Amino acid sequence: MEGINFFQKYLSIWVALCMVAGVLIGQYVPIIPETLGQYEVANISIPIAILIWVMIYPMMMKVDFESVKNVGKNPKGLYVTWIANWLIKPFTMFAIAWVFFFVLFKPWIDGDLATQYLAGAILLGAAPCTAMVFVWSTLTKGNPAYTVVQVATNDLIILLLFIPIVKFLLGVSNVTVPWETLFLSIVLFVVIPLVGGVLTRHMVVKNKGLDYFENTFLPKFDGITTLGLLLTLILLFSFQGEVILQNPLHIALIAIPLTIQTFLIFFISYIGAKKCDLTHDVAAPAGMIGASNFFELAVAVAIALFGPTSPAVLATVVGVLTEVPVMLILVKIANSTKHWFKGA
Image (cartoon, rainbow, N blue to C red; front, side, top):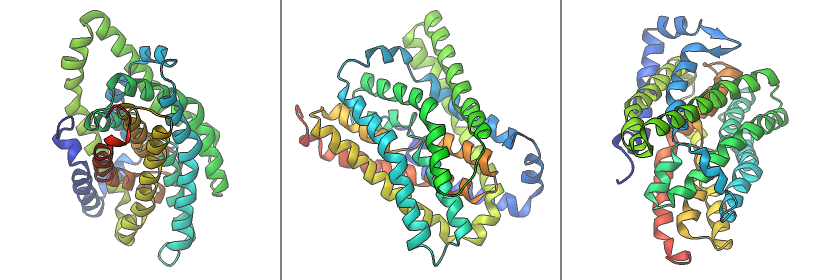
């Protein structure tokens, strides 16, 4: 597929293979997760933090904050994105996950596990996509300049709203988390890589030009990002081995509400964009940003709050497992309904 590489296209298969490898390591070479689990600061795993930085930093370099200056041009698409991502998505995720984990799946999931899975779902719901959305935008022939503005403003909003929304919804779920850990997580996994990415982009573009940055410099990080994600997943699943082996059915049960939420938010954004009389190349990325998740951030914060062996982390990782196949379906839906929009 144009605009999506082999790894991205088959991400769910890679995740499944990492799950198997991680579980086998956890069961047969437990000294690896036990040793790595000892290295942490303020409940944050140092090895996992390093791997997550390796993943997030190249993504942050893709975001051009100079584009924020153009916010005033055609703002309706931004309103759709902001409303869906921050006034709707976190709360529909909470509601859908609560109904499934505490009511419909009650015969299979006990109360403590349900609370942990709900916490993981909340973290996913409060972290809209900032990286893979460039892939989905390309596949739907989205307006690249406008997509950059949508993503850049979203990254800025994450800094302001992620912590209070997560704190509020976890509180409603009877999960107590310290403000300090939330603040530390957002600094470590958003602020630091964001600042690093912005500074790197500025320096390289200033010295070598935008063409060199986009076509020569950024591609150098593709393999590093892939390796970071694969190693992170293997490490996570080595910590999660016992939980998975005790509750293999739970992988599928967690995936159901996450998938329903993804479709719901896409159509809210997509139809909202149509009602606002936006063009398809703005409407499609708007739907994709809300539908997909910044799962790297969700996983990192879940680890910081609940520990790498927690069921909450498992819920966020299942979000990675379901992301690509569901989003590719939404890409097909967006492309097949292009005629709904003006100028198509």
